[in-house]
Length: 249
Image 1 (cartoon, rainbow, N blue to C red):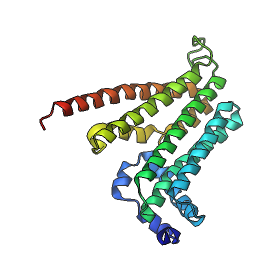
Image 2: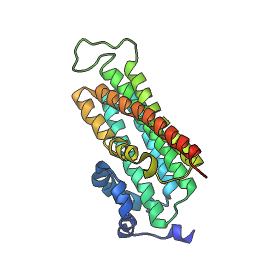
Image 3: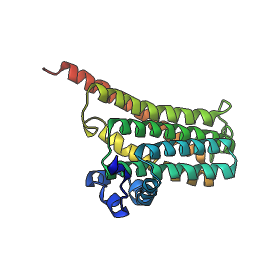
Image 4: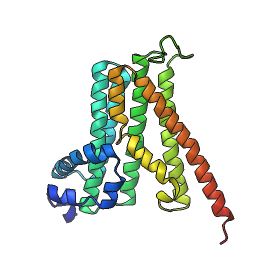
């Protein structure tokens, strides 16, 4: 408890980031979110917030961001994107705090993961609703092409969210049965997720495409990647499990 009450300096927070963690960060995290997260972590600690409290704050911020986007009002969509960007900063800050105070735990990892699930669902469902308002049933650029059902882009956002969450839960379930390093099973998928995910290029991609009037196309790309990734992960884990069953004991 005394260690948690200590006032850490910004230099100590920066020094807590290990070389392995630096390499694991995607470009957007490394050059934008992580630098911003250092003073945010310092401020959170000054306010008496630990890593878990910072994770909870991030989840609330992401939910608010998704709800604002879902309204479809231009000002609300931009405000929602701003809150999702803030989630990315907080998602880095909670890890900074845990490493600085050396308070890593299984519970903390679970909290961080669940708050990440909340953020992905909020962002992708919110983007689906915003895309439906911006391009109701239409495929942008391909003028005159109408999708065959109402609320089509909301459904695409739901598929993207489902694919993303399925990948994460499938791997978590597998790892619970057979613990082993991520790189041994889904290393490439993990790297891609870091690069294009909610702490990667997702929020800037949503912002740029919304400004250009083609948010739905970017959302469709995420749905294809995440649903395709869910299939790939299922096949890889099934093969791994089958190989382990047949391996000599």
